[in-house]
Image: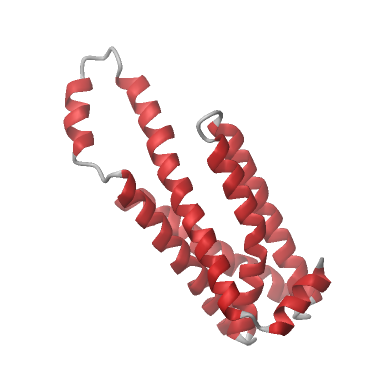
Length: 181
């Protein structure tokens, strides 16, 4: 598997990496839209049903962003995340930006599969879709960690800090989503 990744990085196919990153961001936008519309609305409807405050909830809900807004928010955050993470890793590891971005994008194939399965199953079982998404993210991080050693030949401290650099923007995005959406 690392031979395939190394061959991809040697070819320096940045335009394909941008397409893969765009596809990942599109799927993230779709997942975020489905998540907001299915999980939050279903839970709040079940909570408010029979309490007598459903009418006030409907007026509050009409002021909330639509599904298209959620999709755009997820899409933009996905794109910003991958470009920002590649830039931060480039600054820390002092490696070529395009190689790091290509590495992140080829690993996005794991996230693409996880996001597709999660989007399909979110209507059936949102817990299963979360588990699939978490497993794909952990697999992504594991392959990323091992590929830093195999391809870039960085030491243990650099690999651990690189994982933290990767996880940091995820935490920031989750906080921003909680605050503003």
